[in-house]
Amino acid sequence: MTKSKNSQIKISFLGGVGEIGKNMNVLECGDDMIIVDFGVSFPNNEIPGIDAIIPDITYVKENVKKLRGVLLTHGHEDHIGAIPYYVDELRGVPIYGTALTIGLLKRKLEDDARKCKLCVIAEGDTVNLGCFSVEFIKVCHSMSGACALSISTPAGRVFITGDYKMDNTPIDRKKTNTKRIAQIGKAGVLAMLGESTNVEREGSSTSEKVVGNTLENIFATNRDKRLVVACFASSNYRIQQVLWLAKKFGRKVVLAGKSMKSIVDVASNCGQLEIPSNTIVEKAGKLLPGETVILATGSQGEPLSALKKLSQGEFNKINLGEDDLVVLSSSPIPGNEKAVYDVINDLFKKGANVLYDAMNDIHVSGHAYSEELKLMLSLVHPKYFFPVHGEFRHQFKHAQIAESMGIQKRNIVVAEIGDSFGVSERGVVRHATVPSGNVYVDGVALEDGERVVEERRSLAEYGMLMVICAVNMDTGTVESDVDVVAKGVGLSSDLREAIISSVYDSVAGTDFDGSDVNDVAKNVKRGVRKLFARDRKFPIIIPVIVEN
Image 1 (cartoon, helix red, strand yellow):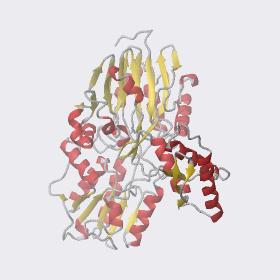
Image 2: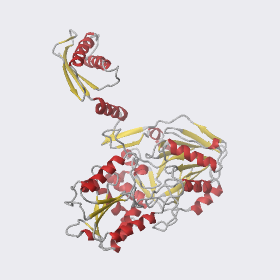
Image 3: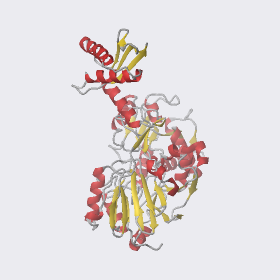
C-alpha cells in the first residue's frame, strides 16, 4: 500500500487502558473505520449486583456509516464479550476472527448469531476493509487462534500485538511467528499497540508444556485418587493436556460446568481440540476414584461454578473426601483471591487434598514477561508506541522499557480511556476526547448504570430510609402522622424526631402554586438528607408522598 504524506491514522481508546479487560480500540483513516477487539470486564465486590461491564460505544454509533469491520485478536471474554450486547448496532458489519474465536462468539450469540456477519479467517490471512489491509499473524497465548494484527493504511502501518507470549515449546507446535513480525518491523511500523499485563514480571514466561509435565507427575503419583482439575474453560491447551493424560493413564473424564462443556464442543468442532476416543463420559457413575478425572470450571471461586458446588457437596451427588485430589490449574485474578481461598478452605474441610499455584507449577501465564516484551519491541521497532492492555502502572513500566529499547520518549504515549490521537509520519497529535466509559450490565445494559451502582453502594454501606406521609395539595399541609421506615440505619429517637420535623418544615416551605407531588417529594428528600451531612453518611432516602 502506497503511503501518503498527508494521511493520518486516528486511534481512539474505548477500553483496555488504565484497566485489565474491556479491550477495544477504534482506528480511522479517511472515511473508513475499524474496531479491534470488543471486550467485557467483570465487576468486583465494589460494584454490587452488576453482571458485566462493557464499553460505551457512543462514538462508534455516531460514526457507524464509516465502520467497515470488527477484528478480533482471540476468543477471550475481555476481547469478544461485549459483542452480544451490541448485536443490533453491529448488524451487517463483518466480524473477523480465527476458527475458535468465531466459534466461541457464535455460541455466545446463540440465536442472535444470524444477525451478525461472522467471518472465519486463518492465521496468515489478510483482510481488506476500505483503506485498511489487515494481516493476522500467529502468536502464542493461553488459547489457540490468537493473532497479532499488522494493519496497513495510506498513513503507515499499525501493529497491534494482542495477547501473546514467546513459547518455544507450545503443545500444538505453533510458535509465535517472530519471522513474519521481524519482516514487518524491517518494512517499517508507524505505531505499535503492545500489551502490558505482565510487564512487572522479570525474565520470560514459562511454557505451557511445563504444566503438562507437572500434571503428568500428578497423574502418575496419585493413581488411586480421584482427580479434580479446575482451570479456565477457555484454556483449550490445558484441557487438551488433561484429556491426553486421562487417556494415557486409563481414566475417564467428566466435564463439569456449562462453559467447560461448551469450549470442548466448540474447540473440537473447529479442529482445535483432540478428544481421545472413549475418554469423556457424562457422569462418574460407578467409576472408582482412580478411574476418574473431573475437569471443572470455577478456578476463580465463582459462586455458581462446578468447583464451588463440589466444595459444598452439591454437584451430581459427588462427595469429595480423602480419596480426592483437587488441582487448581490457574492463578487468582486480582480481586478474586478471597473467593478462591474460600473454596480451597472448603475443599480442605471436606478432607480432600488441594494443589494450587502458590505451591506448585500447575499454571503458567499466557502473557509476555518483560524480556518477551523487549523482544517484541526489538522485532517491530515502531516509530510511535502505545502501551495498552494494563492498568496505568503496567502501561508506565512498559513505556519505560520502550524508551530503554531506543524509542524516543516523545514518541511514547500512555493513553487513557476516551483518548484519541492522530498519528502520522510528522508526529502524534492529541484530538478531542471521544465519548467513552463504562456501561453496566444487570441482565440488560443499564442506561444510567453509574447512578444505579452508586445507589447500591450507598444502600450497602449506609442503608435506606423511607419517609411516608399524606399531603393536602390545596392547603399545603401534612394531614397524617409521618411514618419513618429504616433499613440498615441506626435510628435513635432523637434522629427520628428530627426527620419528622424536617418533613413538616419541607412541606411548609414548598411553594404550592404550580408545584406537584414530585416537587414536594424532592423537598422532603433534600431536607432529610441535610440531617446526615455532618457525618457524610447518606442513606438512600425514599420519600413516599400520598396526595390528598
